Image 1 (cartoon, rainbow, N blue to C red):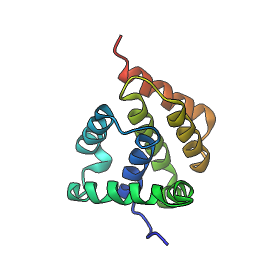
Image 2: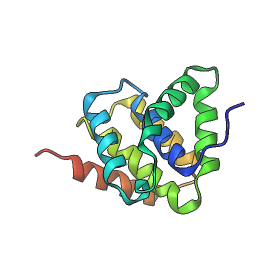
Image 3: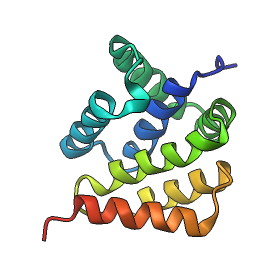
Image 4: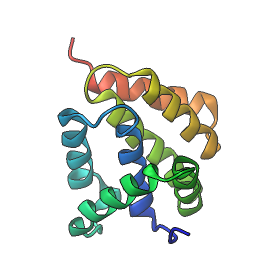
Length: 136
């Protein structure tokens, strides 16, 4: 059984999981790095953990039922206010390379359901991420 995650690990797992839905692009890696370096939620995060957390998440996702377990670990680790934050991070990662692939959209849907986010709230978060990452 996987260990319990802290809120930082859950947020990192969320970004890695969404990025890994199709293939991890350079743009997605760049946005994940930027988010961890600049968002207030990560100001007390030990950045030396990021590689280990990414690797742990990838290993978990390779296991049978790994996706369900990852979603469960993320939901268990996040208090209600940080569930919207996790979804916003996921949307930023999906929007980073300019095109949301069907697997990424399905992953967002699964995440939204597991985090019990209101559909209107999720739509607003998705729209904001799309607007932030729009090129023209």
